[in-house]
Image (tube, rainbow, N blue to C red; front, top):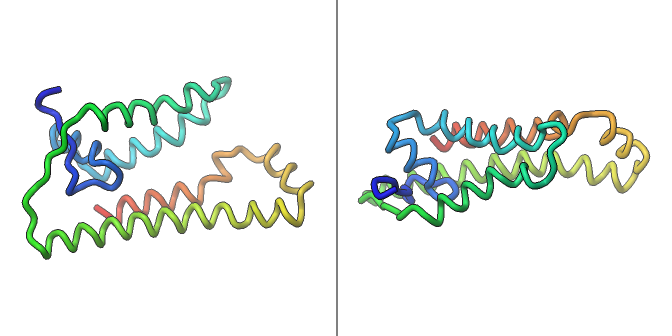
Length: 143
């Protein structure tokens, strides 16, 4: 673990994925998308409880705390570009989450029986698909 680190200047969350992708010399965007999809898809393994769904988050937080951070020297222009890419990621993520929640909340307020029928008949993965797509677009936009 001595050679591993978090890249805080390249972080969208904590820099874990940025540091690991640099260390392993793999595409950062693709790696971020794969890790995000693992976070999402682990929750849809049939017959598993909350324990397994929290495992990716527990692993991420443990690695976050265990790895030292490393910052790169960036010029003011490069730093501004990084800040803008993070804003793009957060904006896309919030747009996706909000786009998913508002219709469900409205349906819960005005049409409770239809909401229950929807929740019991449609797989949750399909209900979360718009937010998932927007978050992936945010990852791509942030670079």
